[in-house]
Length: 301
Image (cartoon, rainbow, N blue to C red; front, side, top):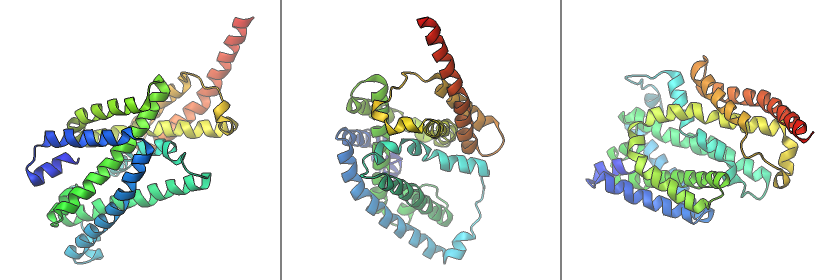
């Protein structure tokens, strides 16, 4: 998403741009949360300022906000597909928020940061894209800014946006695989970065399908986390002393049930996926735990 627009604008080789940017993004995450913090301090204000200026130009070029709002897409997409794309574009971050807000000094700060990031920050990014798309008919914010004569700002905004997103994903995935395998999270982050870089062009060419898949595959995980917290809240208060199962079969089944609910039940895909995963886990986990406890007692007897 960074290399292709920059390659089009500059004539540089796209494969080289993918490789260099992928390596840079992977190297940054090696230094952990401190490097991500420095990167975000630079990226967030720059994206907010340059993106807002792009929206201002879009509104001005159209002749005002009313003219911009009156634009009707030539080929409107189905509402459920649009919603799935919107949710799919950031739903994985919702389930990984705890990996970052755990550094907050107080729980209230963690909640506030999450609200600001998702409600304000994510909404701004959608507004940046929507204004340019309505004004110039281009779906990519970088293409919009280049068409507005903002080549350098476009490269800066796009680069920082993708950089922060990818680094957060690499950091969280490294932690997740480290918990599963016991290997170093830094090593796993590098491996994930190389895999992501190699698969980047294929994913870009199948991006809508990928977002649609994520909109059904990731929400059940969030539903299971919510259900587990509501059912076993006392365990979270003594989390450092709690004993976890290596494999929670009921959670895996609930993820599959949530994906099926998202794909096959009528209604909104992400909502169905969250509810399907949460309800399945709430029913199965106590049953399987009770059966496991009974089998353990019989074995000891």
